[in-house]
Amino acid sequence: MSRPSTTATFSLPLGPESRWGLFLDLDGSLLDECSRPERVVAGTEVIRLLGALQQTFNGALAIISGRPVRDIDRILYPLRLPCAGLHGAERRSCDGTLTRLDVDQSALAQVRAALNVISVKRCVELEDKELGFAIHLRSTPENVEAAEDSVTQVAERSRGAFRVLRGRKVIELIPNAASTLRAARAFMEESVFSRRRPLMFAHHHADVNAFEVARERNGVAVAVGDAAPPTMHRVASPRECRFLLSELVNLGHLGLVA
Image 1 (tube, helix red, strand yellow):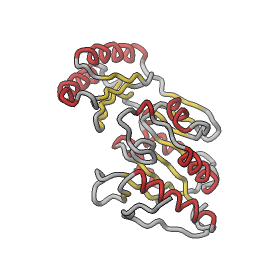
Image 2: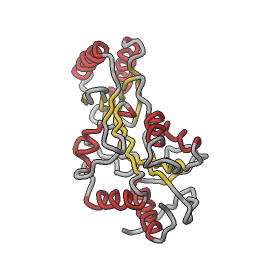
Image 3: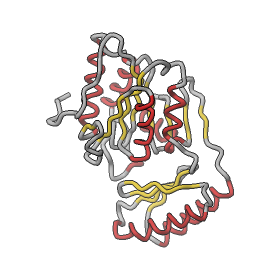
Image 4: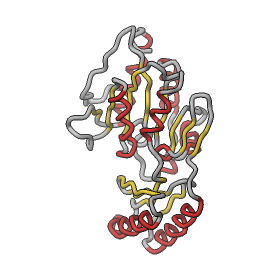
């Protein structure tokens, strides 16, 4: 793997006593962003890297993503990693137990119906994630403002059941109770992550909320991409993130991380 031309804006404390728990966002962090997210599949190199990271961190590796858990599994097949999906609305623990938020079914049905109308009226693509929704605007950038206004109105009519998340060329409606921060805290209470310091990489602003766990647990939080605030630890791209992670595997072979 060739070394990227840019360098990370942080250094990681290492040593024989270093014990880290690794949290990775997928799109825009571990994986390059794609104009067709439904077609994303991790390549062999990424699958091997994740397997090596599992060994390096003695199983203390979790994925945190806006994608549903089923989609995380599709992308990372044949791996089935501990993960939090739908920005924390779903979580699969280290022992494989899957928990999902109990979402008001009436509110969910009303939101689904309203978004279907918006997708037709505004000529935008609706992705139904079962517990949440995404309106993709990559093919209709001229409809961004109107679509945002319409989706915001749907969230307001849900009476607090759902909230809006704005991303690059996408608007999401997710359960208001969904929280990547709570999901990350729950992982840190599991025995696999116990007494470890969180090392977190994220790109999406909703998943960056989980960075609070790094501050709570004397860890390190790293934003991936140029949008990170100048005061935040940062790597420039998913390619650089993958390179840094491969270096951690190499350091693990030397006994410097565990």
